[in-house]
Picture (cartoon, rainbow, N blue to C red):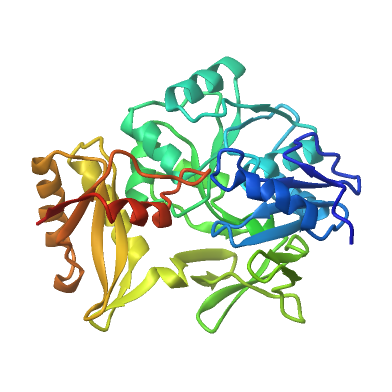
Length: 382
């Protein structure tokens, strides 16, 4: 099939046409290679092509899948023509593109925010444009809380995806009047799988996630499986240079995430590969990362601290911390407090300091890039 009709980073999407689009980050070091790659991709009409987070696969997503997802989300959020979506997530990610699809389905207006994330600029735009809805990732919520910025009254809901939102961060953001709706989503499903309900904003406790009506879920062999008309067509594998469809013959997709389905509610524990064994003991990296985040907030520190797993021949895995702090007293406070709250085999002894934590285009720490940095920038062993 011919790929010459792929439009590159063109956001003027005709959702009803057979045109196809390929989106990738122009600031990524591999940008030039990806421009060349466009010439060799198989062409599927009426699809959007997006990299998965590993950059080893390209998800090929039918426009109709985006529209199915958009209708479900619009219904869940009770959108009306009076709503105004602010887009602050990139169009290289379903978080940005899905808002265009939602606006198309519901005749809502949307406005693209600044390309470079800045929490204060974001708040100014929300106020100036009287925006009612937006989507954020946990790192952006973190920045709003860190800067003690309060939500404007016109904003009625903020869908938070792109990673697990910790209960402590949720609580702090709600105290600043941010109407957060935690969600669980996938690139492969063109956005959300399950999202907190609007009624959850009537309470202050961390909400349950409601499974959206276009999706069926089941747990099989320990991981969540999804069946939906909004699923991807398939992947293009960059290493094998071939297209393949990961769905089963019955149309189920294995997410690789651990979770529990109870009626219309979904609880997600995180990636299966975030469950590691240290000295034979199972450790949940997502849960420990949330503990670390919470104590950094409690200590009112402004630097970033993240937990990384490092392979260890004797223990299986070892936990280490990477921080943007070079203040030895602050680092010692964090390590000592963290080590008091975890099991002995989970304690951290090694800390690395870096000037800046490399991030993906949706502001997640890039562990591969971080590990390359810390080989050269060893700072502390406590």
